[in-house]
Length: 121
Image (cartoon, rainbow, N blue to C red):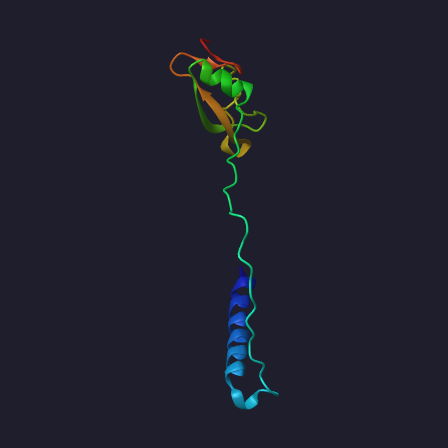
């Protein structure tokens, strides 16, 4: 943070010095070259938008949706991956400092996700 505070004023000072030197005709060493025009070619191809990548859902995500669940996200224990077995006790019961964000399957009232589908516990 301190470096950026020093760099900006230094850059401003350098640019100001260059601007004043370039505008002062009496102190220029030698003749000044006039700029020349350079022809540029027109682009030959039209730019196209990059294709949107399609994401293939995992088997667990497909199982969640196909069994009536909805995909969400939340904090679960560090050892849990995406779509953990929420029928097991404690998989998402760790302290926030020992947790990370994962994809979850919300199955609704009276059901849990066993890692492959929403089921009654």
